Length: 257
Image (cartoon, rainbow, N blue to C red; front, side):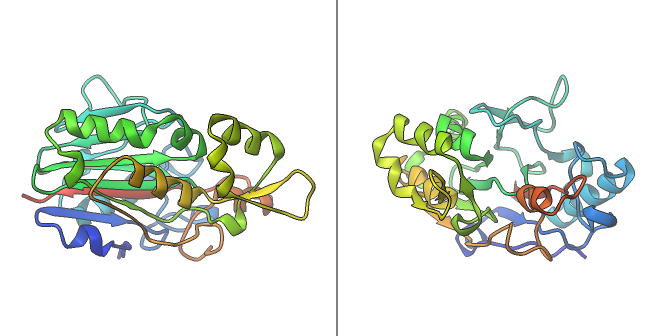
């Protein structure tokens, strides 16, 4: 049985259903054990489909109404109604305003952010890796929600399981890119024992950008994907462990009424 992590900030909103799904409760095996939802992985396609169907059932929607984009670390957000006409779009955020549709994003260290304006009946989901967060995926999601009728000052956003600063060491080029964009970004880096390297606080950076965007509230669940192998997939952990591939987690939100 799938048992997602829920946020009190979203669970308390009328007409909103959501879940930050862990790797528990699925049918996949091996490095994908067990709730892998990544079509881009080398997992058996039938197992991925069954896993996604289990999540759709939990959210109360048909499997074909669980909509996730083809993610490329962009700053592009798209709107979904009852499906993706013309095929799965290339984007890193989705917004919707019709009950019966669940929207979500896949992650394995990057930041999954779920958004809701319950009063307006508009929801969003964004995949915020360092590149997308830096180039504006969060702000693009908010703009798309506003275009669908949301009010920025009424939007609640929650960051799900993400790699923590303690496990995210980056090189000097990475630090230089962020500081060149905004010198104030230096606060998100802490020096490591390796010369020129630092630890990057991706969760802190994401939450601060959300707060600066002027929404009602921004929260972080505080779970590290790298540190908890029993519940979360992690791209970086798979690389460090010499694994051939890795699973993907799904974070999704839906309008129940």
